[in-house]
Length: 109
Image 1 (cartoon, rainbow, N blue to C red):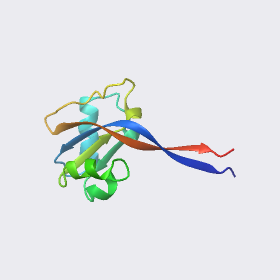
Image 2: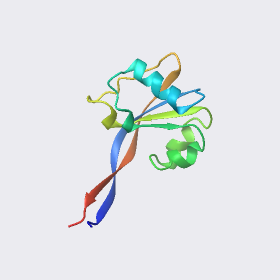
Image 3: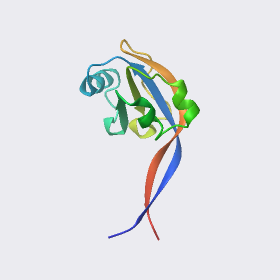
Image 4: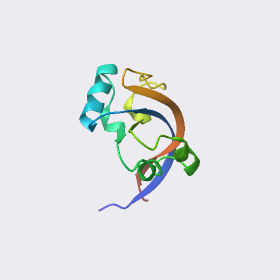
């Protein structure tokens, strides 16, 4: 069994907010808006925003994000281009692109 090293790499993460009753409804809406979006690289946070957001952003950024409703993080690997294809929609408002981190595992030498 190999050993792995975790590194948190900097990344530009698109953050959206809205009101949804469930995570499947968020994913359905995203697929309606951007059918080529890779949902394995999308995080939907409906409760405990601060704790979950702290894994990606610094404390000042977390404090500036909504503390209620649904927060959606579109990670860079979710779309092929540099720009996220999701903007404001009928159910989501785009809060912006924030510099955060994503975990990366690499085999230890």
